[in-house]
Length: 220
Image (cartoon, rainbow, N blue to C red; front, top):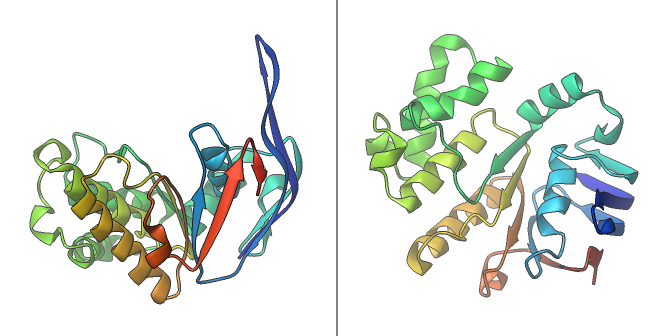
């Protein structure tokens, strides 16, 4: 599902060149639930952004779901990402003027992989799947943090992507809600979705298939 070969990422800063990733070699099999752990600034988010095609490597290759995404144009990359990757952000990133259901429908509207007449029903079904079905017609501001994160996960599943990436998905949640969210990702992996999360959670060992540690931009 995921293959990174000698991936490095450098940024030019006023203080000089900063290496966010250094010679990363990584392979992840389909259907695995992988936890990427490391301190703040270790490179976790940069690694996820490489896999999602949100950022490009300075050197090396990134192949995901049979596509060499590092070689795609920006337009083709956007289309590929919309159909193949669901991304869950730490701060939810829901559009405040849209209801929960409308937020979930957005990726479907962008990619047009779901027939127009089926999109609303699919959004409601996904919200039911993540246990926030009754909140479908509410605006994000009226929802709790845990409910907003569940809506964000439903949105990530909108186009039935083979890969779901989550960047600190439980970082702003209480411990009980965090456990429920991790269990939800476990269920997704059990159903065949490849799930990769960057996390600080200490107890992820009980739900993940594989732990990857990153430090100073390099895998340990």
